[in-house]
Length: 374
Image (cartoon, helix red, strand yellow):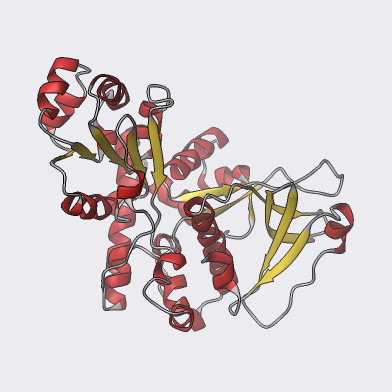
């Protein structure tokens, strides 16, 4: 099964700007790139940042060498470009001094690539983020009923392309386990030269058991036996490598609102379940509500990014435990969303509506969620 992705590179790529495609490992960046190159009708050169020769040339910042290497091509594409030292400066040289050449680079580690291309390519780049397969992408090949019928499997195994197209649950679980241990954690260990793989996994597990709940970094530090700064550093790396997303609390300084702690959601529920080694069917789980909240938050994030819906995101909670799962601050208003998995209808907090009369709150459940995320 071929899953059509949201982006069409043909409509986005242009000379004079480097196209940078971010995203987690194994979400389909290379497939997206190769599908475009094979059908673009232009002469292209495709390289990998793993190649030492490519690292030497693109890391050289030598205009003559870069001109010679790209001569005769309409498009130059470099996969896994975050592994190339000084790639940002070399891309700036190419964009500024080789007119007409179209450049595409991909990177799985935003903490490496973003730092290299940020300042050198100001005004010279377009940036895309590719996520695991979104519900809005599945809607291109399935109708609403078919997508909803897949929700149990999606909450357990997530949306990585290889996982979706695998036939057996055993194979899906093996792919996800390999992703966690052979790719995601390995990237962080290599980049930071961290030896404590167990510590990284311990932190991730604690976060995985607390999806939908506020997290205290101090409590994590005490449980694992390390200091707060180390916990904060590792969590920051998880965020920058597209493993988790931090959601902060909203407040206009009303005394009863809580904002100090944050919530953490996994970019993919399958990765979350791999971290805790739990691929049980949905009906056997006691974490359905948390998985549902994580799923809806991330799918909504994908929709906002893909459709360029600009909004600030928060959760809202008071000291007496009144809560709204997601707030979007956009168009000069507050849009609140309560996520409901079971039959019980959540009660909208009167305190919120009283404090923010311009705001609104909608309940998102299994029947209406596709309108919210797709």
